[in-house]
Structures are given as structure tokens and as C-alpha cells.
Image 1 (cartoon, rainbow, N blue to C red):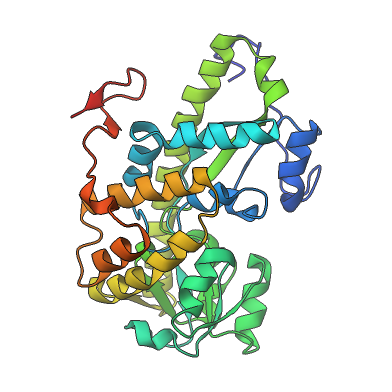
Image 2 (image 1 turned 60 degrees about the horizontal axis):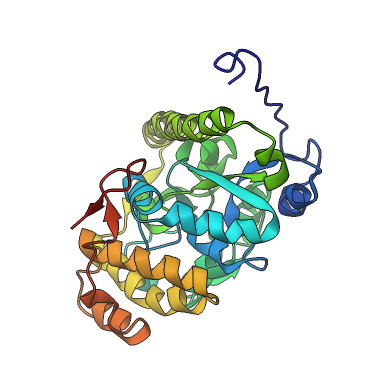
Length: 325
């Protein structure tokens, strides 16, 4: 950014805890203590319900391109900017990372295997989806998963991608790698958010540079993580003896059916409800709801939504805004 702007825009970055702790980032940006942050937005559903719906959740949109369509072609980014503006914050862009995976002491091949399983999940709606199927969820930071699995506190630890999970040593305490990535946090989106006063101090060309630069950074992060994860997965299987198991699509669909109620439960204000409704419309168009009983659940909690379709809700180009009919 400094080079492209001829020195007009210099971004100083700090690691987690470098200035303040992760959970204080939202308030620190509101107060102007920092100019902005890139972080997982679902840490703050208590401040605004939309936090749940601007990063992926189990059995919703489950590939990176789907979220790009929702943000840039279905108005998701406008919803995010509308909502964050209430706090004196500007939502600049979503940042792609990669799918999350889990390590388990036990082989898991069907939904019923979660009944009684002691799991680490990050909490919130994600935890409730698995608790609904009988899992006992314990919320732990990533750095404590290894010890919890080694000592028997948990049987199963979900964290991030293969490369980071290997770095944490999860391959040593959980023989079975549970996939696919579409079933945990399938698209672990971060959010790039700035203090609105800091944002407004930037001239329009630098604002545009940040928006476009964030999109480039997002896809750079995604492909780097995906590449590193391939190497780590292969090593854990071929060199260490881990076993990779993918839950069949029909079993994942059972979880999706059970998740619909929670998609509705966590959307407790107008903007979050608009978000999940548009996401469900996109899921339907993609075919993610094609399993017996899922559409009945959607009709129960979101009456009439599936009949609306996506015509008129998708623009051909984010910058031009031409609606596809």
C-alpha cells in the first residue's frame, strides 16, 4: 500500500495482544484507540447479531465463492456497512482464509457419532448446532486444545486449517482428521473494519485503494492457506499415520436440517434477519437444501422464503450494480 500510494498510506500492523487483547478490538476501534482491525467477527454477537452472519457457520454457505457472491453480488457488504455504522465503524471488506478441520480420538462417520462426544467448538450458534445432536461442547482457546485432548478433557478438537492444527500438535492427540471443511466453519471469514473517523480522513482514492487492496489480500490469504493445508494434511497422513475421514453428504445434510432452527434463533434483529434470509435464498439456488426435510424446516422458520427465488436479488457486477433478472 505504501508503494502504490507513493508513501501516502502507511499501515502499521500489530500481532494479537500487541496493543490490546483480541476481545477488546471492537471497543478499541470504536474509541479510536486503534484505526482498525482484521479479526473473526463472530467474537461479538452480543454487540450485534449480524456478527453471526458475516462469517461462516456450519451448514450454511460452505465455499469461498458462495460468500463472495453473497457479499459482493447480493448486498451482503451493504448490510455489513449499514450495521457497523451504528457503532462508528466502517466495514471495509471480508477477508477469506480457509476451511476449518477437527482432530478426533474416535472415528466419526455419521451424525449420531456426535451424541455424547466431548468437543471443543468456539461457542455460539456453532456450538449449539452440535449440542442439539447430543455433543458436550467445551469452549477453549486454540492453545489449550492439545492438553485437553491429551488429558481426556475432550475427545475432539476443532480449530482451523491443517497447517495450523499441525503446528498445535493436534495430529499427536487426535488420530482422525474429520472433514470435509464444509462441516465445521467452512469459510472462516475475517472482517476488515475501521474506525469511521479514521476512514473519513482518507481521501477517496486511498479509500478505494484499501477496498481493492483488501480484496486482493483476501484471495492471497485464501490460496496461501489452502496450499499450506494440502502439504500439512499429506504429511499428517503419510508421515505420521493420521486417518482422514469425510462425513458423507447425506450425514452432513442431517446436521443442516437441524441447523435451520438455529439460523432463525440467532437472527434477533432486522439486519441479521435480512442477512440470513438472503443467504438461505442463495443456498437454495445453489442446491444446498436438496435433502429430505430441509426445505420443510426452512418453510417452518422462514415461511414463503423459498418461493421468492434469487431473480432480481443478484447484481451482475459489484461496481456497476446491474441486476440479473
